[in-house]
Amino acid sequence: MNRQLLSDILSEMKKNLKESKGIGDLKAGALFALGQQLDAIFYYLGHELGNIINVKPTENENEITEQLMGIISEYHLGEVEIVQSSDEIIELRLRRHSSIKDLINKGIQSESNFCSFEAGILAGIVEKMSDFHCFAQEVSCSLQSGNDFCEFMIVFQKE
Image (cartoon, rainbow, N blue to C red; front, top):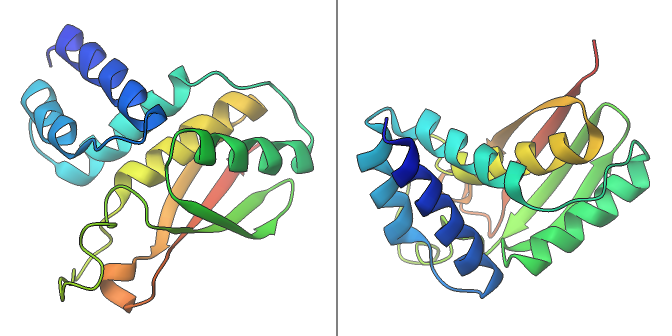
């Protein structure tokens, strides 16, 4: 793994997201720094990027979801809807996020979840906010379901 190349790519991704610019080329470039196993690599990239975004630490469930919604908006990660939130789990829907916004309504389908980057970035952001290890998973991808949103679940690992 080329750690310096990865660091440069993550910095550029952060800048582009904040400026509402595309990051598709950067995702492909990151593969050269990391190797294969795409889902794991994209989750890792998202998680690492989520960890370098400035957040305010909090354990309050409402503050976590409010801050998460603000960060998603600030970095143009998509249009977010919180479906459920507790001190153990956050379920949300993302519309028009970076991995699928150019693929929706073009007849492109996937047999598996496609948005591991977004799952990773959500986990990284919430983990940094809450100071608990978190895992995020895409539970329904719009490229599978035909919906105009992807659904994610973020789980807090408190024990």
